[in-house]
Image (cartoon, rainbow, N blue to C red; front, side):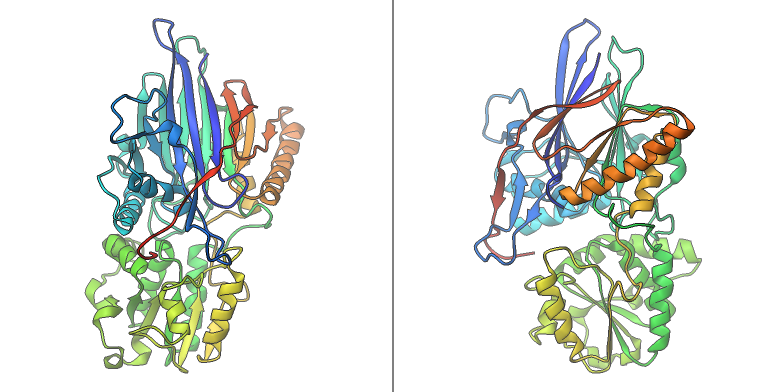
Length: 497
């Protein structure tokens, strides 16, 4: 009987450093016991910014499953592939660091957007060598079906998140002795919004179809499980931002969002076009996003709203313009630095240290992002400095101009209800601090209660910690061991990015 041993290397005691090592065990046609290794996510956590001597990044030690370029003998535990759900650093950040440290990385399965973000970090770290990619293209069904070997297939499916090209994976394993397959759903970082501009987004029918089969185990994130209800949709956010622009037709609009949030950037590009403004962006990370996504953003807008956009007239790099040549009512400024990062455009401008942009009394500022826990002592003073200069600052949650990329409790519960429709054997909470995973466990208990009432069957709930190893077979899951290694660290020598 085939089974998985699933090591949670990171991400279950913090919001960050998501990394899992998957050992797949099976019998081949000759009856020989075999096993292979895969890596699911390979992310980093960030330094405590209150400790000046902290390294920039912390990441799980998965080097036992890698080899260095100079190694002559093949590592018998070397992973065959890295699978990535999306392009945020807490899911991909360790890849560039390990490449910089001289490790030979296995082939990476990811969407084009995720690949572009890995390449950006490789360039920033000046990491040597190249990484082999197999691009997952949502428009090509064949690329979404990953054949690891004759006994293990993995299907990618799309979901909505703040960064486009996000998805989940369904592992399907069956060896010579299995009468029915082992199915594992791995779902992390998602929301159920179907209105995102850059498609494909969340399609509930896909999850419902998956739920028509027996699922041995379902992993799911817990980041926003404490929050009840559902996120506002991206289209609702767009309408709210348009309302604010209508209130200030003669003001310069200054917006900020995370550079990886290309879904929100697409909204601002559309609103710039609609309101006869130029979107003028500042910041290296935003520059990289525009470079990689400009064409796709414009195409998505044109398809959704049946309009034509002149790219070069609408989107402008602030490095190459003189703002005094453009009427203030025609400017929509886009800045990086929502978390008050050192060297980011918004941070520098708030201190009047930016070379090209200064906040003015006629500015209306839209902070379309949430504060990452731990950054409050940096973000709020920055916003206070800005507020003392400009006409108005709009921030969430007072103003509904930002929706999280993570589903709230109602969305998580909907997903779990759909995936457990036929028979779910076990549910595994992940991606979050203990309080987040406890909230997700309560949601799962509510779904179990409904299942018991209507169908008479329930699923087991597991709440593992970092280091736990979970054995998964067709009958469910159990924690069988622990490998709680220390995290590795990395400090950026030349400059932050």
